[in-house]
Image (tube, rainbow, N blue to C red; front, side, top):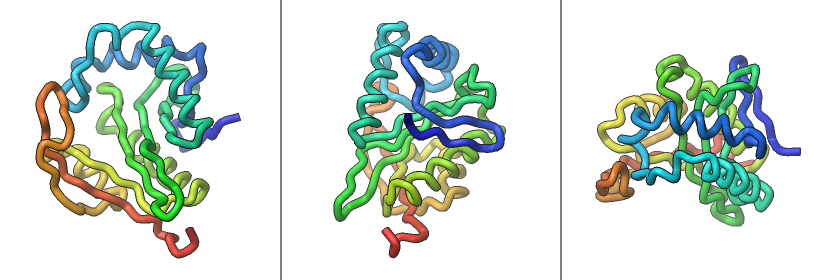
Length: 185
């Protein structure tokens, strides 16, 4: 059994093998919408075989304790609203990870991502025991800036040419949120 998080309007969990088609639909329906914020995607990214390999790899990473790469589903679990990921998970004396996310174009601006990320952060701080979650965004991504600020992320720096997004090296604002109960971690 894997982790499943529940909010008022969503279910947040790993996708299962038979749900790869749902992931492919998310990729296809949001291809243009997400393109400015993601790495360049080759055509084979938008094929069922790739979606199947992503679902399998997400399960492998989860079982190994290396990442939580969850889908945010509607209550009926028939459609992906967005994706949220805790990656680069390091325990020991660091107890930190990176947060990544995307939301379907038709669901943006409705509070779904904020709702889902609050549940995810609660999980990684209280159940997993992380001390720090880091999230970075391009300076022109005002929606991500507002979202992260509303979740309590604080600006920690600015990295030039940090990630290659949409085919170009992009600067990023570096933010982090600390576990509010970090003295118990």
